[in-house]
Image 1 (cartoon, rainbow, N blue to C red):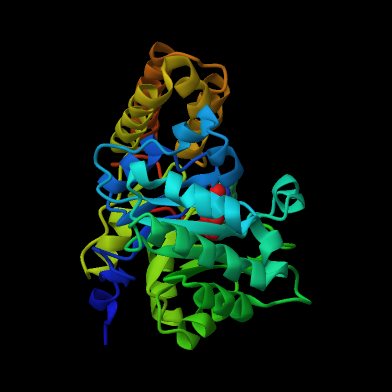
Image 2: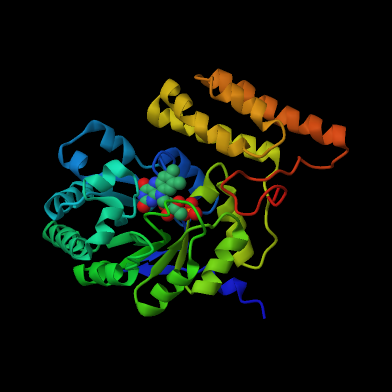
Length: 365
Ligand SMILES: Cc1cc2nc3c(=O)[nH]c(=O)nc-3n(C[C@H](O)[C@H](O)[C@H](O)COP(=O)(O)O)c2cc1C
């Protein structure tokens, strides 16, 4: 029996009704307003901002406000905060209110040494009672500001290391503090982003809690999203690396989950969406900064593709819309030429990138 059509469904987080369960994960350096906009257009049901420092927010640091910028087509967005002190996170949650976040998420998974040293990110996995206190403080301050309808959620890892796997305890602590949903990136802090995410942990968490549990880790293809939903019974799926340079994964997953043919994107469409992504980015960052920031995005869009290395060589030296414009044109022209030379009817298929668990030739075009 094909149970796929039931897998894409709405999710209730506290009082919030989300239209669907395919999310762009918080990804520092990537999930900015321009990229989120493109992901929404391609079918993401909710996108998370990059993690935002609660300390910086309470000190009114201008760079922080930039991270909170919201795209026009984002009806809903989730803002992720990081920090270690309940009173600071409580203040930061209220300071977010002018941006009207649909969800405020607490980062308990960032493995970066500087963040961990400050007691934030995955350091919180070593102190579940701090997770509880932070969530509780955020809930109280939001309630005092008349915003108790905004759900506070947490994103955790399975634990600090394989000797201290404590995601159930951490999730319990978060729920005790008043969290309305929990996302599990099914790796320990020590694993970083290596090895395989252990989806059995997501399944265990989902079966242990009544509130929504979202799964994160190793969703690189629409089939992975379907498999995660089916195998773990989680309420929703977050995509991080699988969306970099590949926002199409959201519409592809939607189609697959709905039992429809997967609408793959050809080279011309990929280039056109990448161009749009850059243009949107210039609206938020100005031309030069947007172009410099876009270099890595261009690399993601073209990774694993025919002639990609040559284009990427140029991209990392490009700093203007005009220079990138020429690259987009060359990308399409080169792909067309390659298809002609090989007699192929369509654009050359390629592996997505080194993040892909699937490898060369497995990518849907
Ligand atoms: C470059 C990069 C930046 C990330 N930034 C964040 C972040 O700001 N907040 C967070 O909770 N997780 C962050 N993550 C973790 C992802 O949200 C996700 O949980 C993890 O990458 C596993 O999912 P994936 O296998 O789909 O990539 C980041 C991951 C990467 C690779």
